[in-house]
Length: 412
Image (cartoon, rainbow, N blue to C red; front, side, top):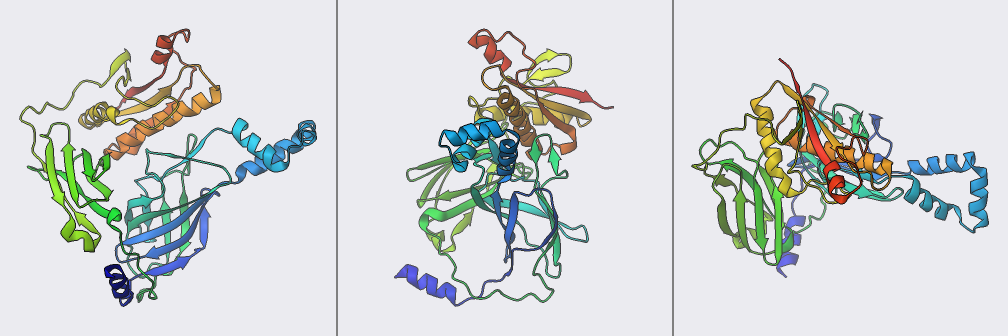
């Protein structure tokens, strides 16, 4: 009965917003991603988007046209077009992944920019999600709310449309419904948050200076256990399913913090902001002055404590300590530029190994950018198995060849 009352109560109020379904776009960098709708709410500018890649069907048809004998053999084997296309996707194409860049911006004609806030149903880089060709993926991205009166905007995910093997999603000249005298949107039912959807969010900050910190936060909520590494702005967010929460917060150079929180009195609001303040450790070390990692050449260093699962490009949490040291090193040496280089052993498909090494180098680069290092200071490149440091004849030697390194480029 209480839930019904809440829904009826919410129906009686207008929700502020302007909606633009299927906006027209003057130019976009990728043909496999679409903007289905744009909403301007009280808090955000929300893009409802869709990823749908059918480009491999054209490649498949072209391949079959150029290889009629193969097409005929497949037909004689009783394999129809859909089955042959599935075989083509599995054997001839590498894995495709998607994510959304945290440095994305909405740009107005006057040059004013509005920051990316969060994303739903798509990971934020450097995390990535594998996708299947021919399958539709729907997601939402949230930006700061733009002011009334601007009816043409740009969505810029990155300064370039493409870099290396990565395609970025840039949209220019998006026409939206956003008049100067915009009015509340038509009444629509508002979803009432369930207990398991309760949102706890906030920042981690230095208790002395107030600056935001990169920290690791763990939360226990009933049977749910979750953890995350905050962004360079110190922000975190959890969806929890119990009233009693146990938090533990850790950051390099700071005393660890443990706190309990009961959210029962806040359930009606659907969310609660909880900021954490960490005390600097008495034994805090000086910022590292020496290069990080194992030196392999005069200006090249191996990140010997950066880890990945076999065959995957996602950085494991135990890598963050050394990567944070590299961040500090680059901040202490602001004239240095680096190139992140990924390497693999020679096991498996060479083309897949090249892509894997490139993805790993890219993800390390994205982590550094997230921690405040300028994009222009970091390049990345994958070499696959082309630059081994040991023969690929034993597992131990192959382990040595699976590595990420960085090369320092000094500029006076």
